[in-house]
Amino acid sequence: MLVPHNMSGKMVGILGLGLSGMAAARALVAGGATVWLHDDTHRPDALPAGATLCDWRDWPWDELASMVISPGIPHHHPRPHDAAARAATAGVEVISEIEIAMRAAPAARIVAITGTNGKSTTTALIGHCLRDAGIAVAVGG
Picture 1: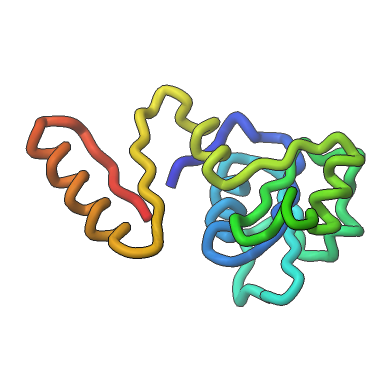
Picture 2: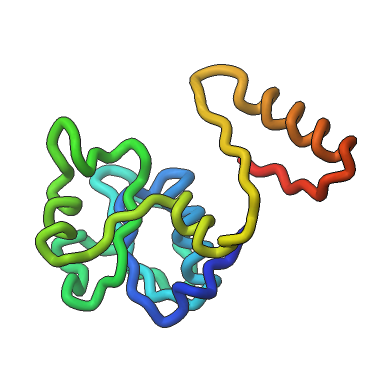
């Protein structure tokens, strides 16, 4: 896990508590951020120690530095989620979990693989090829 120490002491809201939202929450808490969590439907079994689960309307909007929005939640089209609209009004930056990783390791060279089918196979193949070429590689998913 990349730990975003640069977010230490900052307040961050996380909208969406699926795989990416929970991974972001764990990383941010490990990095020393104060984390507020919300999901419209999903209630996770376990929360990172120190994270607060509540309605996004109850977040301390005047103190939030960022809001992490999960990939499946609209923040522009067709209509932004109400929390994304509130973030814009409050001047809170809206970022993704990918942005957290980029900020945690700004010098890292990253190969990102997207698509509907074949991501795991492609990731494994690229990792293998880079290792064979003598390049230090960390493969994630």
